[in-house]
Image 1 (spheres, helix red, strand yellow):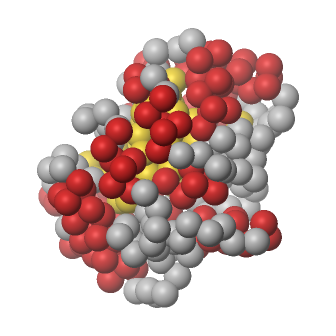
Image 2 (tube, rainbow, N blue to C red):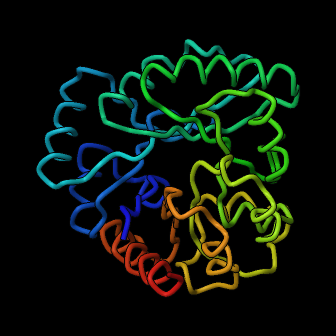
Length: 265
């Protein structure tokens, strides 16, 4: 089985370097690290290249054979400057990350495309691919929106991130993923949920803190896995409100997600 990555949102209460040890004990061999907040005042762990904290994180990565798959979250807002993220990209490269999660909070599409293109150019020398995530409460709300931004920017390191929950809540389907050019799909985040959406006021709370383990809900996860490219990176993003212990939460998430992947093979 390929390295399933633990998305940081699953255990956002634990930062690096301890995140690496927790992931290893839970059975993960890859993690994502939230270096930047997706919103003003949000939780983040801003490691800097060459810092003692980053060196210790690297030491634990080597000791536990845990890779850093991705860094997050780069937010494109009306006032975003690509250069604001240069330090995060440098740190990501030092951690060995391969991907960056992009959230878009700007409704002006032409400006978004310009900024995203600048970010792609900034990330390219660091070997980082940028994956645009869509969420129903943001201007890039649907799979088709994210794909249109990626196509418009025409950069070789620009891709779409498909989150199973956001796909369902935005009205997307497995068929819409299957119809997408597979070369556009950069990464996939797995979790589960009821098919029925919560009220509009509860959608953000569900996404950020109350998802279900893969196999517990009603999302068509097996069908989704069946239409994905074989080599697409898979991330387990399951903030599980009912389990307050981070270690137990991560272990439950790994077991459930790996079971889903095995049964879908």
